[in-house]
Image (cartoon, rainbow, N blue to C red):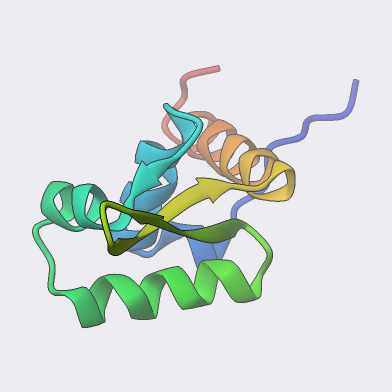
Length: 97
């Protein structure tokens, strides 16, 4: 049986791992909620999201509500697979299967 565990250095960076973990638990999150959960600046979050977006792990959707534009984020199917494989590999490394 082949394992789908795979260490992903892109996801492993602390903020990106946290982003993926938060997004994996829901269909989508608003940018400001993600920023508050990570306790980082807009620019730090944007930089990390850009890396994940470039890898096609995260997709951004801009929507207008009450005259204001809001950015919503979600993991793509590829992102969910990569995150799941990364978590599985981490569990194997620490001896939890």
